[in-house]
Image (cartoon, rainbow, N blue to C red; front, side, top):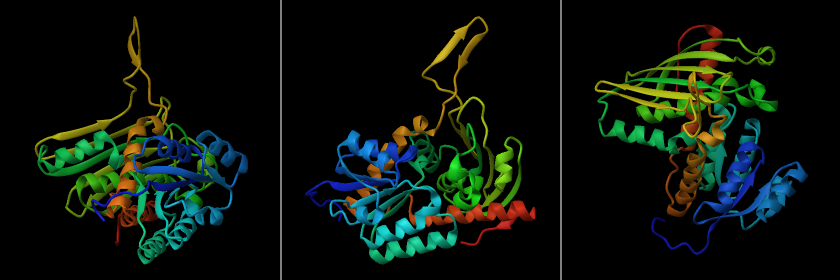
Length: 341
């Protein structure tokens, strides 16, 4: 309940110690008030052991044993997307609060199962769309709500990753492909900033850069035109290749002004020569959104302590999956697809 006295810190366990799992592990180990990292888990024992030694916590290689640890109150799931559903359900059944890295699940039916289980067992579920916690996106949200740009009428997004995903994430049957694995961030932030659901999408896509992406049934470049329920319009361009680094830009056009959010260059370093000043790109999302990850993790713990709904709920995660599924359908049928929530 809100305002209650905290008798002990919320015990946190991180599952899946790949790139993003290690980011959350480090944050919970040192940067979140009222949280304590108590355990890590990975099926690769030398990975789990090495991380546990760095942070001086217990490690597990068995998820069921991990969930039976009485000191773990909350689970941070950073495993491959196709494992999310079963891991969320098991965590809920063990009365553990859950933060799961995006996306919530591979399919909308899987997501609905997760939401039903979480509601049944009365635990929190937060989905890891960290852009909502980023300074620039939160500032944009505030300015929109204050009426600084009038009525928002269009959302424009550009998202280009440096390279295609490796391993399991390259298989759209396991990850959801470019629309879910990559662009679901953009769908979520569009819904949030424009304060409206997306009701219709029309997609054009192709394979330009990578034969291996095409062979697995995914796309590496797409353009998505969409409509919001509040009659605003939207456009997202996504690409699996950006030679200079992570390229993420967002614009919100209003009747009285425009908001710009971007990170095509690293302002912390530039090289000046006789031909001018050259800025370098931001290599990947960990650097761009590190502070957002901290704010996201802190907010999750506060939701547990104060017994409030997370900013990015299971329903938000479900809606993003429905948008991604509609995008695949539009691409295959080459026509606009209405989204049923």
